[in-house]
Image: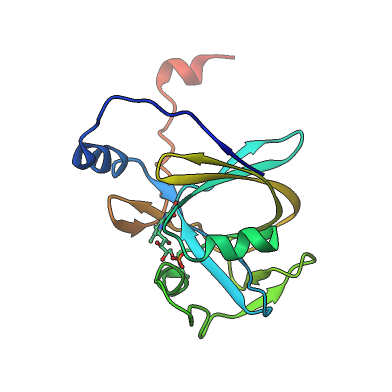
Length: 181
Ligand SMILES: Cc1cc2nc3c(=O)[nH]c(=O)nc-3n(C[C@H](O)[C@H](O)[C@H](O)COP(=O)(O)O)c2cc1C
């Protein structure tokens, strides 16, 4: 189902928009499915988010110029593979345009038949629930059918660079805090 969202906003400088959102770290998720010949297809998104727990829903946004999204939309289901810090090569391959994106990428079939990329941090198998046209992107809502944690730390993207999450060292309690019952 595709609905058009009415978006009217004052003109914003594209450079400022990119600069500001470059400050916000995101995860890196490979959205994967199959084309009509059963060949794996996928793209990388930084817009993947949890949306609802009851029912379990997720969301992400795809540029209208994407050649892969129409393929996954026709299938009606996808796996969101949360990429790990060991999967920069997967990110590079699936964020390229072209036919042979899956060369050298190992995966197993989910119960929905969609590719679960091996060594991902987690997998979320979904059915496409709805899609809204929002400016130059589509906003997709997926209904979660199955999910599983894998291994490794999630890859992080910020300002055109990749990295990883580091927890701050836990500060020693102050004298006042230790004195409290
Ligand atoms: C870290 C990262 C995050 C990205 N996030 C998005 C996103 O949220 N939505 C999107 O449409 N493209 C995003 N892209 C770009 C797509 O992965 C890229 O345009 C892809 O090649 C599209 O290929 P396609 O034409 O085969 O769909 C991102 C790329 C990278 C490297």
